[in-house]
Image (cartoon, rainbow, N blue to C red; front, side, top):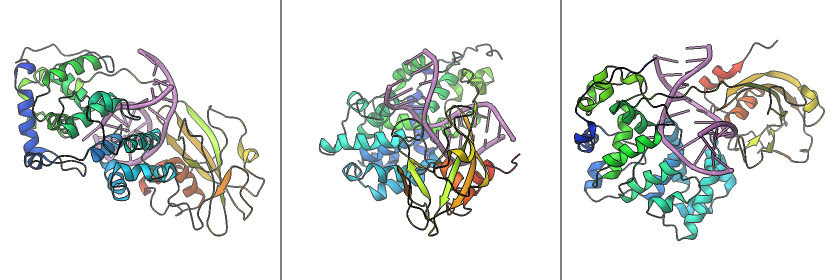
Length: 381
DNA sequence: GATCCGTGGCC
DNA sequence: TGGCCAAGGAT
């Protein structure tokens, strides 16, 4: 595919892009649990930096819908950054389980600790925020703009899409990032920079969507180069992604008569770092080390319970699940989950799937039926 | 700069 | 149905 012929239209930087976006935001902003809407800001209300920070970290590469319930749960459990700092890493990992990218939870705790030591007050500049664990260029700019009213250039995936369309930027991402940033820096208004950032992201989420953008409803359509060219969906151009290799392994679900499940903790760093898991074979390669019951944590009457799968960021995984019942003490490095089941444990989704395959109903609906149906592989050779 | 890091919804 | 993508960060 080739980019459409550029069409001359009023240059976006000469239009009052920020003014139009803010007016649109006043009328069409989304109501979100962590957001202070424009009419309350106008009455002098200020966002709580803790809630802004928490929501921004949760929203990294994660959809708004997935974040909502986790955000509510976190602020109910830990209303302030000091309260969060007082929590154990273990409790934070448990509360984060299912949201993904678990290094975020570890960095969340590290960041809360640092802020708590300084009296529980977040720094209020982009640079000082950027120095905290888990806060990169995007998150620092977002907190600075939204919580502290600083004219920071907030560039996320939404903004990249809006800007590459507005200016017909055919340079592939992520190569075009610097160009996009420079443009945004020129667009940020002195007043209401936080609302401007949120307005741009809301526009990207509801109007300037990846597929089938609703250009007829867009406040910027008159100045959008891609719209004038007739193919906004062409942008942004992205580099092709490498295909995901398939890895295989086996998972062992040992069930005690009181319903407890044998677990162990994964290393702090790396894939699913710091989370719990049922014992498994290795699965760092396509066929990794010991296979089948020879890799079980102890000899027992292991019965096949099915095969589960999950697609991770850079590989796909299939695990053959084995189950046994035993009341033996936990082997070294292992522990029995709380009697009655595994609810509340820091289990990533793939591990909940494994347990669900071995003990139907064990995850008590915390693993969606749809997800279970989509990933349970019933045809076993 | 390239690679590693989850999950769920969408068409 | 599977590829795409979402308010990215760390190394």
